[in-house]
Length: 307
Image (cartoon, rainbow, N blue to C red; front, side, top):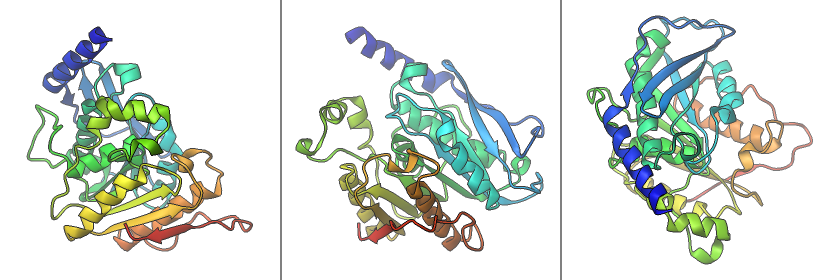
């Protein structure tokens, strides 16, 4: 156990000095409105960005972009988790992406590498805006669980910053889409034994390293009412509001952590997509009503609540 901790610490130090962004050297080969590009090289392997383009997209466009980060406690997971979500928002006119980032089970890295890679992903989109057909001033970051946490850290964390990148290109997103993010653990009595063990470890310390500042991007936060992580997320949202930043908070009655990702055909999946769509529409990133419809027999709905 001691050896594992030492190895992880050494790898995280190495990753900070040898990882590097990989700018696009040529136009992407887009097929069926999809493309894949390596956005970052690291000692633990290349990291890829899965890109989804709207019909009729051209690299001369200046469209909004959105990048999603999968959940899994910075230990497991795959970009495929947000493939269908990214595809939907591509149909709404955005250049959408689902990004790889370093995780413990594959890359044997500490949690801070996740935050560094999320910032790198946003920066990569911005620095390649001209080739990707996106507006560098309209980049949205989002995700689920720990993926939502690192999306938020791209705006509200200055502790874990990727080295050897062009600091003149901002890694801060212009809006946040946060589905059950972890910003800290509640009273231990409300946690499962597994959650309590995580709360005591490196990840528990990592997820509390956010700091709200004035002038940051607006955010939408979505939780199940039975998710104990919403307690600290409400603190985060309240601080956003206190700093003069728009923050919308929604709850799904009776639902637990990760309810959004259980099934693409779930009414909750569709309802969450529609609420995100409305939020992005209110910011001017999409136009018109959501194009995904709620099944006629659906009776559940998200509730907008005060943080």
